[in-house]
Length: 96
Length: 152
Image 1 (cartoon, each protein chain N blue to C red):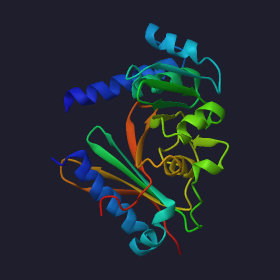
Image 2: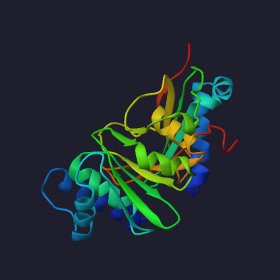
Image 3: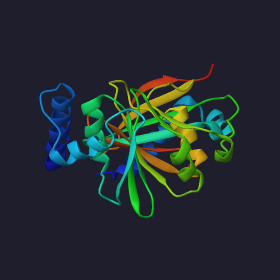
């Protein structure tokens, strides 16, 4: 039985590979990963943009925002079964 | 595993009932919401008295996004709008002074759970590596990171 962290590592890597490892590495400064345990199945998501990463200097903003929606230009998601490590890819949108 | 399954299913059922108006919040959560009744309200509470599940329930009851911040001596609940939570004026000042950590925020919609660009930039602005997004549909926590290659 995999731990949640072990499954997360498998799933995030699968998502990165699905989008393209070199692409993700090149644009790692403008991407995010997410994971959560859904009753023994770990959901993993990676989103990345090839736009220049925004400057994040808190001294220069007059507001911060959290937002529930907004798909990344390139993304992948999968489920990892903690019982056997099996990966089920869910969605993939990779660069051409 | 069976107990965990039951707990998750139970939470989802409970959240759905609240979302549909078929059940009400507990007294404790009603009191929390009474302190932040409207969008853009925020309030301080004793430290470690607010849980991630609490804001999931507040989000289910109001259909709004909520955030939980924590400092050295206090918890803060922020009541957002339908799909956003805003931080300006005094709250922004506290974040700029590095007095607060973003513990979690809710995603109240039925879509898939993702960490948005705003969510990521929030972490980068406050120099925090990870935080939690909690679904107000299922009550499940999801951890998100601003660094894709943290584990590799």
